[in-house]
Length: 304
Image (cartoon, rainbow, N blue to C red):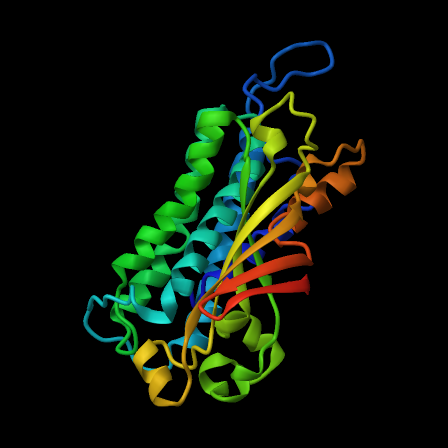
């Protein structure tokens, strides 16, 4: 997950006038006269080229700033026990968001639903694989099978929902708050606010939001009003739990129950509002929440 989250935002400059919804049409695109339109291959090639250039530039810049030691022979590393699996949640989230954004981009070209889903799902995996390979050649990390499984899982969460329901009903989301733990090990958890949101897992929370109204269409429950289940950690000042304990900290998991809003389900005729809703729907809105951990149940009147 170390270099994954920025890739989500690398897709945003391509999307402002395109992304509008989290449901996909099953019929071919037609004009005002009802004539079926052929796929716009020029737009398709342009989007693919722009994404490729932007992605390669992002990978190049991040690799130069992150991999400080020379690359060596390819190695594997089992890091599934690190960070109480919070980094794996980050991989799932990032892969899902890349798949969602890419599918919506390609939907506007008029290609078939199957092609659209394939492009989206594969993108969520392919666009993160080079990072995993670079990790494999890095003496500091190593190729993580757990990361690859998480990458695949994120794309499957998107692909499976569209294939089953023709819409996204369960939204992976992200929230973050700054913690004092980053000051304990700034070299690991971030030396400033711009680094901490990415590196300090103690301040990150990953959510799954869903509305009963999307599952029970005649229930009268608003499809935009969601229940949200979150996962976070605390007191992790090292990747390994044991090393955190050696430093005097007792790491533990935190679970959350909260309300959320699916911004893509709010009815509006404004394309701008739809676009903003599409982007913002990757973030969990601040709201009251119940925090459940080994320390008991705590009510948070305003949690993000």
